[in-house]
Image (tube, rainbow, N blue to C red; front, side, top):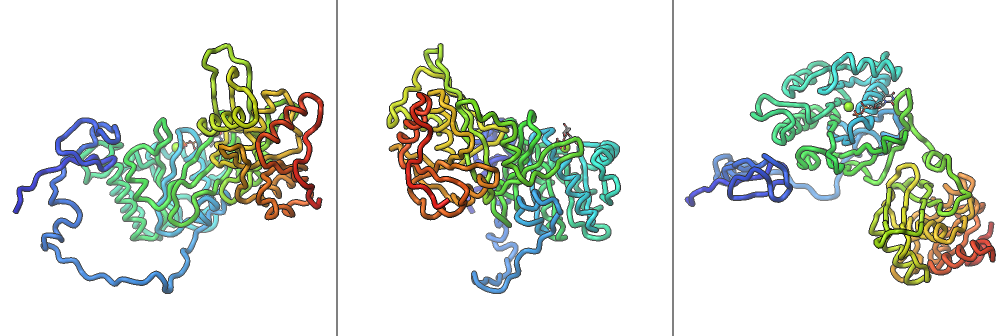
Length: 474
Ligand code: TYD
Ligand code: MG
């Protein structure tokens, strides 16, 4: 038999090296490299014939299987993100910055489920019982039958959970504070976090309880600790928001039981997190439509239309290298739109600072925002105020062509619901959404140069924004 050489494996990213190092070269984490004997890996003993495996039944892709049962919390925005409620036996990881409201949200979810008669257990490793109680009183939830525990030892927690009726939901707040006697490293270390997560996942899978792990995030927004925890759980949710704004967004980054593009919107009030059923109204509140540089995007978040204001400020720069700053959008996308406007619409941004902001702290990722961003930029550059009752959506190609985007009909309906009367939309694909919202006048735009020149002309008092295509039936 060949001489077995030990290998060194990073417990954070899984990179293998052949000598020990203090810092992993792949992921940059410190003290995560651990010696592992090659013959001790999973499957090693079976491969040597020491433990014979048994033959498994294999099955086809078709066959009878029931849809996953769901346990709803009754908090509609949370249930939307999980894909219609928690799946029994699943494990979720909720990440978010400190103070964003993770504990508040989960305490509210626990109370809502307890009021529906389910057994829920809230294990806090960070706060003492009186603190959690105080919060419950403030939230008006003190009457709910939530079982509280302040504990950090995973063996104790699992033993407690196995007593009595199977809980529907178990909260572990947070996974970084947990430790296991079996693992010889300090709480919070990669090995501890991973081992504790494993123990809790095993508990969830064998008992059928849903376990929600709270995870801290690092400065760059990643869930701290081993990335492997993200791979081990069934769903990773992220709770985001700007601490200077009241609303918070819950997003699914990964979901084995549902779509990942849904968001839940909450508002942090004195009475905890309240659901926001109509986020567009919230994001457009306090809008000043009489200033140049603001365009309303008829956007989509998952399957949900969302109107937001895209604001641009283009100002002459005293600097040799003018500034380009973006909040809530992609900086590369901004550079691209500016380049397209310069190349195909004859505008000059070279001597200007450009600031682009998505109002309300929302982050937009979809290319449909191109047209709204371009309109806001041209409006600010030229000083022309855009029509206050207009929404924009469309993707801009490098040639300046405005391309169709998905869900146009839904975007128009949402705009109509919020009182908008015009929509500046791509020309192609118009037939598919022409009749979606009869109250909205469609102004189609085939090339960004057309829209840009109309906005510039309106600044010079020559014309208001004119329809670029045929008028819709409405
Ligand atoms: P918390 O849930 O403790 O955050 P996390 O668990 O993510 O660290 O939220 C704490 C913040 O929420 C705190 O700064 C105060 C605020 N808050 C309210 O504004 N209203 C409330 O009713 C509650 C309970 C908290
Ligand atoms: Mg907390």
